[in-house]
Structures are given as C-alpha cells and as structure tokens.
Image 1 (cartoon, rainbow, N blue to C red):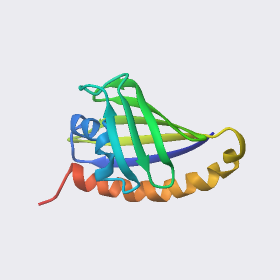
Image 2 (cartoon, rainbow, N blue to C red):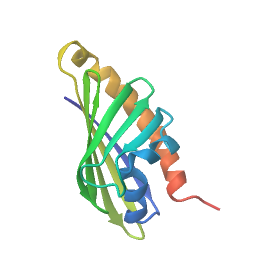
Image 3 (cartoon, rainbow, N blue to C red):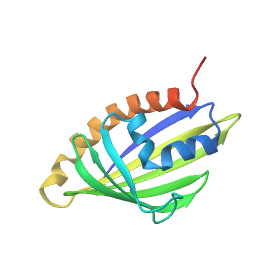
Image 4 (cartoon, rainbow, N blue to C red):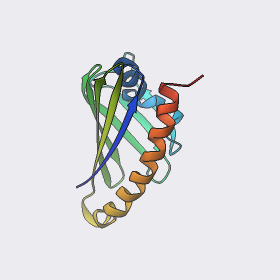
Length: 142
C-alpha cells in the first residue's frame, strides 16, 4: 500500500469545504484528471452513495462512500481495474476557515503493485496543483 496526503488551508467554512469535496461529482471542477463522475442512485449524498466515473490515467471506476460525518470527515472506496483507492477527507475548523486533509491510499495486488510508487509520485505533484485550484474555487478573491 502507498499513501499520498494533500493539504489545503482555506478561508471557507468546514461545511463549504465538506460539501464541495465529499460529493465526487464536483471533482471535475478542480481535478482535470476527473473526466466524468455520476451519482448512481438518489440524493442526498451520504453513506452508501455510489458513483461511476472516468479518470485520466486510471480509466473507468466505481466509488462508494463508506463513512460520512458532515462536516468533519468522510471515506470513499474506489475500485479501478487492478487498483483499489481509499480516499479519506478530514476537515478541521481553523479560525474563521478550515484545513482539508485528503489521504489517498493505493493498493494493487499483482503486477500493478510495483507501479504504485511511480503512480503515487505523479499523484503528489498533481495533488498540489489540484489543491491550488480547489482553494481558488472555495474562497475566490474579488
């Protein structure tokens, strides 16, 4: 298993951060690798919500929210062909804003396992840019 951690400090409230990031359908707005993400089932989003989507470099996959404690934390389990991704989002109030910590754990049985360090390295670089984009969306200046 390999882990990638991304942090974002923002002036946005914990509720705003949580709502913007826990619902995977919003990911395409701040992550250019997210090509299409659809909710499979009814609103509201919460434990048991399932998604299907396509991500550049990973292809098609499914995701399910397995923990959901608004506005503090959530956990989403994603499955791609040969790759399991566990995404944990933690939102902490900080003064008048918040800190978002996204922890991505990657696991791949078999031959793909040897590629995890390279995949994680790419995700770390992309993650920094994604957090900058997300920060601009959450607390636009102007």
